[in-house]
Every structure is written in structure tokens, then in C-alpha cells.
Image 1 (cartoon, rainbow, N blue to C red):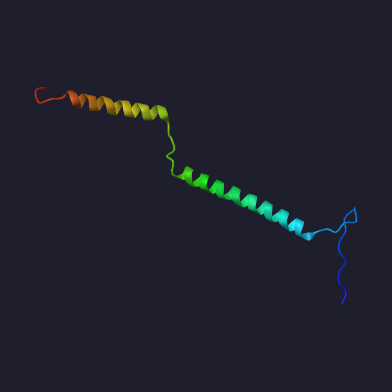
Image 2: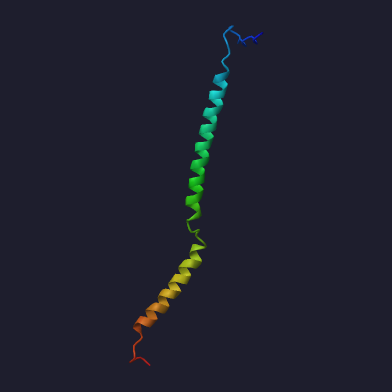
Length: 79
């Protein structure tokens, strides 16, 4: 039975096919870790409440505060 000859590089050294596999596995691991981190960041962002127009929100809050302040001054003696 004949076995295939080992591949040689430019220095007549044996090319180890495991090196390429290990390199691909390391790249896969790095990409998988990045995906996991980005996924957790996406989950965190999903639970945050987006801000709208701040100026309009402040106006609405100030109007509500004025109404509340007006009711605080109200008593049964005011008519």
C-alpha cells in the first residue's frame, strides 16, 4: 500500500495540516466571543427607554407641575 508523500514548504520542512486547523479554530473562537458580547450589549440596549424630544418633555412636565402647584393652593375657603 502506498502512502501519500508529505507536503513540504520552501525550506523542505513538513507542512503540518493541524496548524491551519488550529488557526481556524482560534479565529472561530474569537468571532464567537465577539458575537456573544455584542448579543449581550443588544439585550442591554433593548431594555433601555429611548429619549424623545427633551424640550417637549420638559414643557409637559412644567405644565403638570404648574397644575399640581395650583391644586396645592386650593382650599375649601377659596371660591
